[in-house]
Length: 237
Image (cartoon, rainbow, N blue to C red; front, side, top):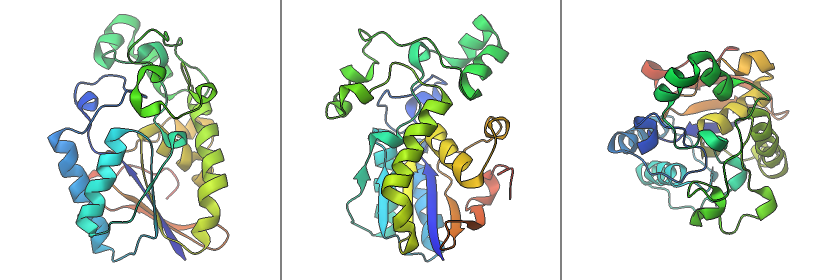
């Protein structure tokens, strides 16, 4: 048996401000740093040796992982991959979720956030929030940088990366991935075999490690959030 641990980054500055963040490269709040530190201690209690770490290219994910590694006293390099970045929210990027709910209705905002195939209008390439204007993505091929994404789009890039780069390593390695609400949601859809309706209901709390035990066929034998007080319904466990 090997372990796969998924950690959504700790609270970010735009999480706190309730803004659509997507590919904008914001950092953690002080509370987010504390969440990451607690995640590290929860993982440490499990007495599991992590063989390989992955993070998105985004600062909030990178810094969450660095804090976890510091708690674990583990100085291994980690792989940074744009493929596990957060979903791109298109023209919604930077807007306040509550204000948008008042403007276009809660149902419409929920549809944009959780529907499988619907995507917001594309973000203008002139916007400072567009990934082509953010230094963190300067090495990502332009053809791979989105203007907007649906959850389906996010799923396709995340799962391709998982199958190409991570899946086979789980045969003999314990792996930790620091990522985002929607990239982790995409992985859970694939690993738990959730349908398009179930995935819309799946909540991923910040800074709470989701630990899965997998057998040699990559089947999940057990799964739990390590912070029981902030655990969310996994729908299938």
